[in-house]
Image (cartoon, rainbow, N blue to C red; front, side):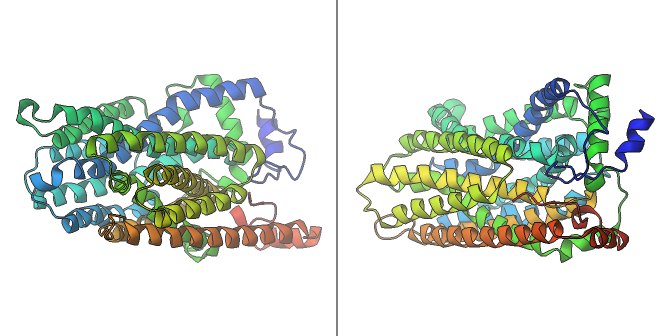
Length: 489
């Protein structure tokens, strides 16, 4: 094994897993690696997906409750509902970047379950609140507890999976976004039938039951969440040895074991491609938050009653999940991101154009437009996040990139409640729809710019002479600045 490690230290591997030199120094049995990845998918990724599902259910059920009687029961106006949506992000946004940097110092196996338990109990308690100020406090608390979730999930996944394997695993996480929309509508349909049971309104049952389910997920995480492959209970000794070899193979750029260096954080803040990615995330989150929170209201504006509306939202999100999974597998297979993201953004433009221009009496066509909007958003936003992770090497630079990306992206929550608060004379959310259409166009332009920049960087490195390559190395260019690093496009 020592001989293997000695040879490995000189290997030059890019994050696209295309070796600059022959990759004969390490041999991993493909069948054993396949079984290892299956174990990671079944135990680790499924746990993280449950945590993500819990977060999105407890975050987005406000939209289902809003059309099920919550507003009159709490004497809440539409403006106060918009304020409640905004307040979630008052604590969610500022704590994400610190959370990204602290994940390595505070054990993920304890940090994540604690956060899940915190937002779960808050959600459960929301079912017993009686006025608007109490509801505001619950949204602030849920925002705080959820702020550390995504950095912990993302960094954990990137330590178990190589860049080539990540798109489909993040697709599993983003399944939760779609499932939260679909299951949220389904749960609402079922739980609203409990309206009046034990003197409790149906919308209150929605918060109580979903909060209780999330408490159960918190305990599952407490029992099974690992800090790293070294203490993962679902891996045997042979699996851990394979994981160790995989880590050696990819640590040239990923540097998972590096100690904290503020220079890596500064590098991230100076990297223009991080800010381009964060801008895409911001505009994409305006679209995502819009459909996750206001899709029930949007569908109801077509003229359906509140109970049928809850059911009609279900297939929209389930179809979006299926499409996103298929595209993610395809994206991993061809190792391309932008060629899927730009069409996704343009399909969103088409969907919102239909919602903006089709007469309100053509309910079937308007409903069909929703099946264009949501899948396009998922493809664009989900792949943007994976693309960002693929493009940054070095643990703390990547952790900072995650924090910047999510902090900037979630600033969208500060505006989304304000653009979907008014309806036109025909009941259409014209302001929100028109804004979303413009934002989707902006995403297509930004994705194209980022693609051109990364392709140019790859070309520059491909054309380096041997002396120029060595000069880059002598200058201390490491991580994604290393001359052998290539960007996935």
